[in-house]
Length: 140
Ligand SMILES: [Zn+2]
Ligand SMILES: [Zn+2]
Image (cartoon, rainbow, N blue to C red; front, side, top):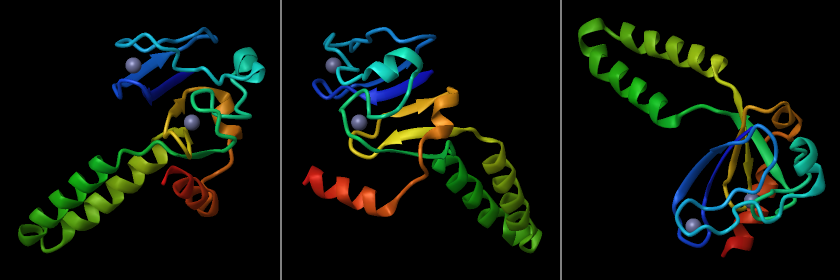
């Protein structure tokens, strides 16, 4: 499983690939980045809570890079002048193909850690706006 997160102490972005569970410490300040890993997570990456911050809810979404989508759309708009709008149709189709091809990513509502490339990710529930709002309020 791959995971990425921001270290809560020194705020650096970190990415790791774990074949099986082992403790992962921040590359910079060396603090434990998975202090809340549950037994389930240690055994088979079961997501009953976020292994980083301990929040009980995670969500699943398409691992789609928004910047790529926006860049594509911008290109489509620029070229639509010469192509009479055909480029817009082309980028829409390309966008849709990219979207279908990408995998899924599990995210924590609270700390925004991301988890990829493990069958357990597909068991995480899809995004829930109410839970999202709930965690947004917690952060304030
Ligand atoms: Zn750190
Ligand atoms: Zn978390």
